[in-house]
Length: 272
Image (cartoon, rainbow, N blue to C red; front, top):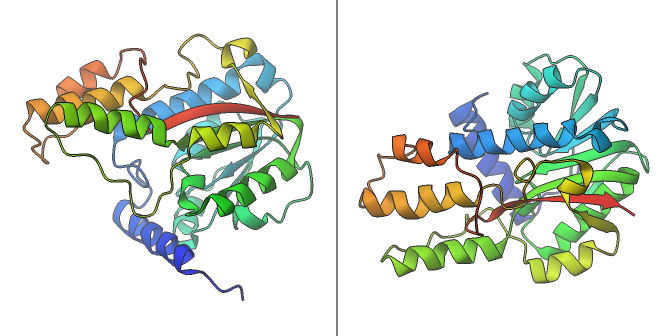
């Protein structure tokens, strides 16, 4: 049996707690329902793009968790076969209880995928690769995703980056709010390192070139929500921890994204 590193144990323990706490709920892995809804909406828009939809039959989700996202995607795309991969058997146990048609679930490690080369038409991640706690491990995972993705296939990469995280905290500090610490189980990407490296094997695609509307698959899709929920809202409520996702936050959640105030961003990548 493969031995787990200390970093692996951090991830295993964290998601075991998530499984016990949230079961099959939307808040598993993200205790912000608006953020989760925006992520799922963006993924749905992405797979509805004509350039993506016409060539997509097999899709791999890296880090499927309790299959909350797949539970929404499968009915919307019944002709796609989805494979949900996760490191946590605790979350997969919940995912399998959904009994989703045309969906298979497998326990595995993105650093060492068991699939043959070019097995999938598209791959997506939703805050998963940040759980690899070193850049070297993240590179390993990205190379494995590239290997199992077909040539000219798409990788929808929804992950967290330091630039938006830093800008968010600058905005908070300007208003007398403390910085938000990076979660202990995450390692955010640095665009200055990520973009040159990823460009060796992938094209960074403008979603509008694929037929997307200006906000359908916007890279900064979470920026306005994060500024509202993590800057304006705590300022107005004096940081009251019991006041989350209030009517104020819900109201502004419908506004288009602006600026760069969220660590979570969406890259559309096409394998060269």
